[in-house]
Image 1 (cartoon, one colour):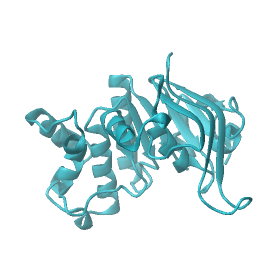
Image 2: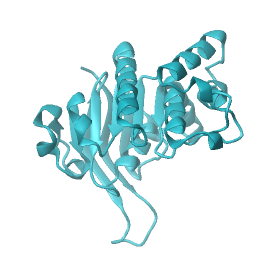
Image 3: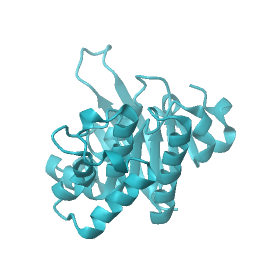
Length: 241
């Protein structure tokens, strides 16, 4: 399969004194179109940073990040934002919902800020269907502060799916959900990925779900070792945190 995402010679660090600052180093990472990949590793190992680099939220100090051959790390901030809204669906760890908007408008937000996207009868219908599939129809007129953690998370997932993205990413997307709702949510993410041949990337600490993915990558092994990856078939023993 053709690589949808590739990182080559990537180096990224946050500001700080040399020798004490965190640095992410990835010589090579390629992820195929339609592939389902889980990233694991302890807190602070760079999993969220990696998602931010792949999405274009962050830009490496060295190296290149590509989507379908396009070097997004070389784009301007405005160009990366336009690209991200149109092609990437993200479920952030802190949800990033806007308090001044009711839940339904948070779901539709990418369609309002994207220059090539529009809110229509069809997209409103899709928003309602997504909400129904995750059991949050009753929350759509409420502001985020009136929602539980789990409800906010499910609204964030609806927002990530509303544009039918080719790249879907989640930072612990089921972390605040009960087991039944978590399973339903994962099913929805996988169904979307399969229907659109979308690439699905998830950061998780939950090893019980790893066998659902095509590949499991321990970010500690990935750093500086481009081919240090394991398949989901190896199971948690092969991808210990």
